[in-house]
Image 1 (tube, rainbow, N blue to C red):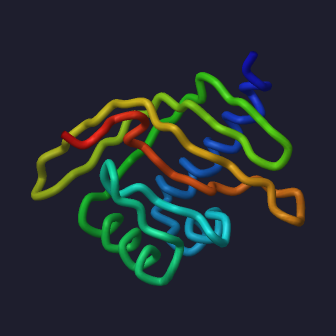
Image 2: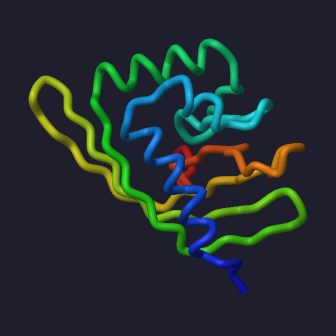
Length: 129
């Protein structure tokens, strides 16, 4: 059975709020120290300054807007798997694009009891060809 979805939607909602504010610094800090960001199926970037710079550039280039809705969450101690419906809108050269999907994200509770994103995978179970 899924965990309390209201709680996990607050966690995902905090991520989305930072994302939509294009708040690179605080979004970067919302990732766990050893987090991974899946850039495309089969390719993840570890949390480092390159990741932060990439997020900042992404915000500048595409002015993204994200909505999230956690559908399922499963917790084992300090780790939780979230299955998240999302919509992502981006705008480049005056043209807006919209993508909808189901993300598989992993949250990790840190030593201070705060939940942070450990794996950010908006591709979900999408695989490379």
